[in-house]
Image (tube, rainbow, N blue to C red):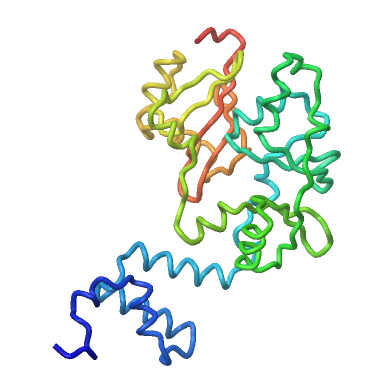
Length: 288
């Protein structure tokens, strides 16, 4: 066998990146051609579908601005700078987030950010009803909504921060963006720890005197049985389906609705479905 031609086994052992590199040498003239090469590589099984999707994700990120992927202002979960530790723990528990913008008067007045882990030392002395979070607020990164997403990702990595508040051209807060938002553009939705816990813990959990956390996929039958309610099970199967039906649209995080004497709040939703709800039950409710 000629030494100029490596064995076929060596070729097949090359990584997909090396193969793509060989195909691209001197041939690709535009991003459109690059997309065609990626599609062709997938069709010929040189790369698998997951790798193909990731490459497309990287290309898409290079074309997007922060405004395209940010969490809108209306869906931001924030803390007020005079919140007590007890109130802050309640918000953290309900939202399952780990980082929060801290505001003063309104969402246009961001004082900084708070990491959920910074709360832990303050709970040790037991005075959580009177202590406020002012002394543990960290500086917050501000970025314009016109910033390119790939540039922001490099800054996230270089400066080792994970969240930024997004402002418009007039300086008003328009949303926030996290490193997870960018990574999901590349690899798809990333399930967090709380989402995993939903599959291995009970769908209905008591989190306050009259407040329960409810997985949106909890069946109406189970909900009715647990709370001794009589919501109609003939048209929808889940409590999330009922809430969506009553809203008349797919609600966003933070939206609330009252059905009978039960106050429902959307805690988590994606672009296709509700994920987690909170319900405040009537004062006569004695469920545990």
